Image (cartoon, rainbow, N blue to C red; front, side, top):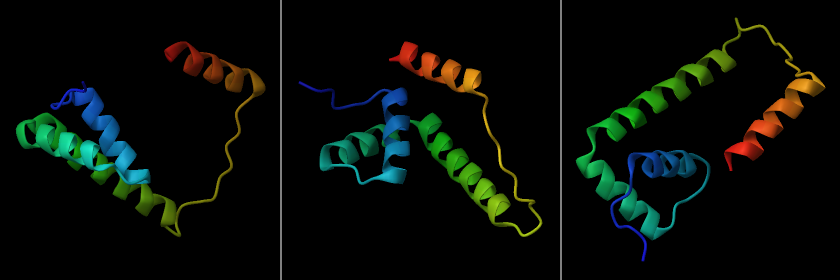
Length: 87
């Protein structure tokens, strides 16, 4: 049986997931129950939204020069290795 009240870590994952896809009913309810009690996660949501807005405004600004960033093959391999190790 799954937990009804989520941890902060799982709640923040759901917050981010909700930005890119729709949560199912269980996820929505679990997240709302946690947010009802947790001021830290509420603050996380406010800060995350503010950061997203700032980055979006920066990216859309006509004053922002267009840049292309590339990673070396070694950097890409290192990132892939770290992601695989974290699973």
